[in-house]
Length: 174
View 1 (cartoon, rainbow, N blue to C red):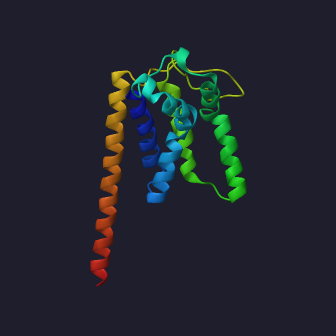
View 2: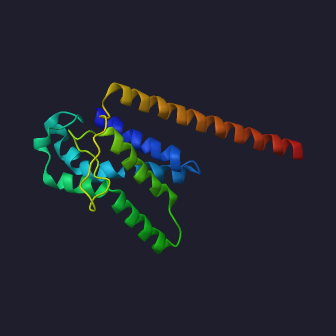
View 3: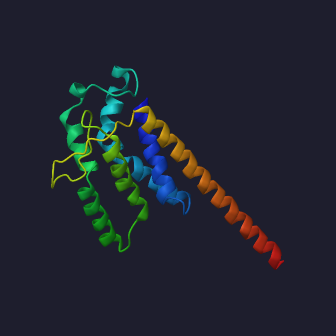
């Protein structure tokens, strides 16, 4: 269950950080926020959902090699930078919601220990992995939830103030 909350919080962080412009930007940012986990663990999780009886952390020995390879690919800042630069070159402008992807990687660097899928953020240039504090540690887990709630509350307050200012301006003009 914690892994599902982890994935959802990556999407929420992506949305609040890079998707405040409009609903479309929000959903693209949320998608890019969850995509590193979705594209590395998604197939395995769906295939084994019923065998394991839930979304909990699987045993390392049960995870096939392709998951590790995809994890290296999707959790690399080097790969992200390459994809971002290619997208910018092709579309002739940056697609800002993509920045939720490196935000996901940055969070994972510090919230994954070397015991279970440490983040290969420099792959393929280096195999170095930082030994962070596990995301499932209660102080990290609950701090993350509190910070997400705070970020969305601040965004909501900002939106309400902006709408109020627009209504006041319209009433002053009429």
